[in-house]
Image (tube, rainbow, N blue to C red; front, side):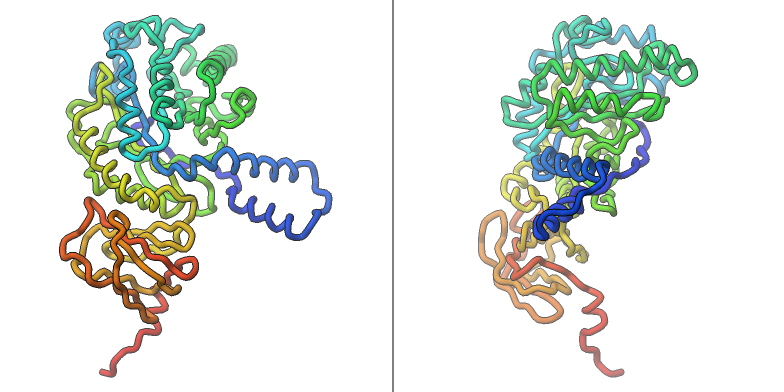
Length: 448
């Protein structure tokens, strides 16, 4: 990952609009002949919707940043930020000796936390490959670990029934052509073939792969990386895979970093965030997000049909920092009780409350109360009738009163019945929509 936020890339047309087009065509009967380019676009959008169905339902994933930088424990950008010479940094490869099958604990924690997929660094900016490769000796099996760390990760994810993907940094601080490729055509050709070769190995040697997560296209553009050819190879080898937008092509989904920003044009998106302020292991970084913050971020992402990819930075031996375990364990207790409110493909229109957030599945509105107000919880401007309500974690029925301007849920406990967030499932007569401007305009006012 970059040390600063990565600007968002160009967008493709969202799959939702394409599916609506397909549905309309089916209703109207056979459509007139289309230009070949338009046919291809419709087919590509339909294929993208097929490949991404599981991902949209998953909503919550685990990111893992692990490499030679973990040995130093001073952030994953330590090589560049501290100006460490390549020959000095290479020595870390001998000191990197993680315990066997450390990834099993990652996968178990991810499953316990309610995360449905994992994405691990196969090669970060430092250039060290965590997988077995024929293209360089700067890889885990030929250095300190003495084995394929990516294979251990793949086996761990599969053992827990999780989908998995590979992070791959195009930028490379170690390869002699990693910067020279920007100004020397022979170096560019060598480095592009090396890069494509490593990606080919990742797409060939581990069975079915669910996600390819490119990062940092510096110093080349899509033409320089030959990204069209790169993606074509990836899809030929892995026809069900999804790819992100960081090889300078739009890809299947966008990747806001360290912020939650939904794409305004309906494009699929995934917000990646750290648990503290570092991606790789940083032993002095104690700025941890609380479990409540993690749950709120997950709700914010699900509200706008986005995913939340939350990072851990294992220690050099592969163990997970204790605070990461504590936070994700508490988050997992919440997701185990409230999973149905998160794992949904539906976008949610209601959003106005000073103490709650919202998600939706069909006609069910989930009101996630962050700051419990007491015995009554109220929602302004709901424009559809409420049929029933219940506390999601316990199933306990909740009484309610509804008029034109608000719904009041009454008889609730004075203290929040669930931690760190209490969710009320509200069954509505139709898709829940909210209009607080209507309340402002139409609510009766007294004379002065």
